[in-house]
Image 1 (cartoon, rainbow, N blue to C red):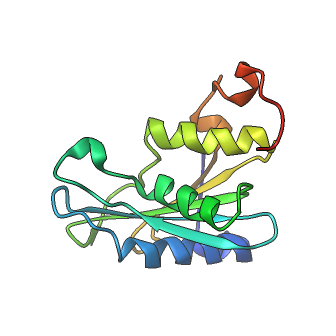
Image 2: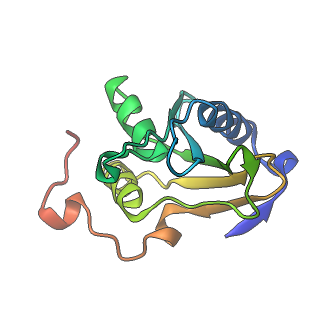
Length: 155
């Protein structure tokens, strides 16, 4: 994991981070007040965003990362180079960044491993004062995926 300043990010990383920040504003989080925005960047520069949507039946809640994956899938995108995640709590910046939960890491791994695409995650606080860059491989070592089930092709 590497700490970076906004100015050090590539242009596409800056764009995907800005898209995640905008998506976070549309989060529906009346219970936790923990708003999360996520945005994915495809290898050709398309950016697809998502936000967390809570539910009083907590198991029905969808994380911002999975929201972005589903949104991208509907648009026909399944290969991703970058994922940015921005969080706030009660409308304020958190003191540290937030990383994807286990379920989101597994869903991200599904597409990353199917397309042999290394995924870089850009994790940032609300005001981008703290940015950490990490790979999905670092967050999910020894991951189980489609190849482990004998699936090698593109769906």
